[in-house]
Image 1 (cartoon, rainbow, N blue to C red):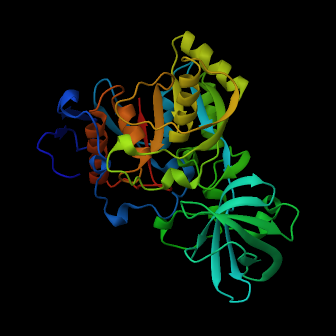
Image 2 (tube, one colour):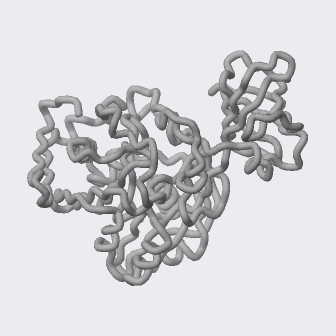
Image 3 (cartoon, one colour):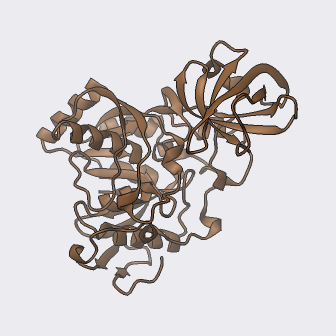
Length: 388
């Protein structure tokens, strides 16, 4: 964490006892607007998790109690200890597409990589092309299968937008969605620094994934096993699902210097009536809503903002940008991973660390510094955090 004379963080209990995190901060009035650079931190490269834990629930869990500042270091399976009867656990059941395709330009034979971003209609998609700077409308790409053999499937570039993404039409197949199992690879994050392995097809997918549409995993959900979910239900907890299809914008860097200038990406979501009713009933009864992942938070808080704090079943899109200070209407506890510096994901976590206040940034950075000292594993295949 960068030195800041206005932030003093004390972490006690490094010997194994629960830690207490205290943060002395500037008053909100002295920082009316946060900068992207305020959410920066330095991570040793060896703490980037490039492979998953041996078993899903064998990852570690850093628990932060917001009311007391207490920090505990546990195993993910210990998450069970933090639930109460009547709580509602909400997870994102979006399924990751094998969205990375490879091929060659017709004529030149130049190798091209395509990453599916969003479907406009069957065989009509926005994609990222690599290399893509010189690609123009009319360029045709012959796709290969996973073994690198040529196929009859073609992608023709129709257009390019201001962000450099290309709109393509696929031919030679009824619907490219149903050919991805033979053509596509799991779109692993570039910081893995390795090729896709056989195990990734299972481990970069949650055990409850149901609706295909994401180009990245809802990573906080990767830690759950069917057995852990059953044990949570046995505690009297209602397990519910939302669907938000994660786009590439989730991981796009924030280019604006000030958070006030950043335009959030848009993502499609669905909140069903069963989940909406369960959450509304739990909140009336005074029980907590525990969200798994920042994507789940975005859905619940988006719907609440649209309907005066109530949840209703709907399919829509959201551009909600959650950062300090933010008042949460629905979510009472958050399970999440450790995120990239200066990312919108880390900004959301910072907001949740101290709802309605700016000091959540300092708290989040102090928690991350503690996780680095304790040698937690970071990012998609890394360890988890519970903020309660």
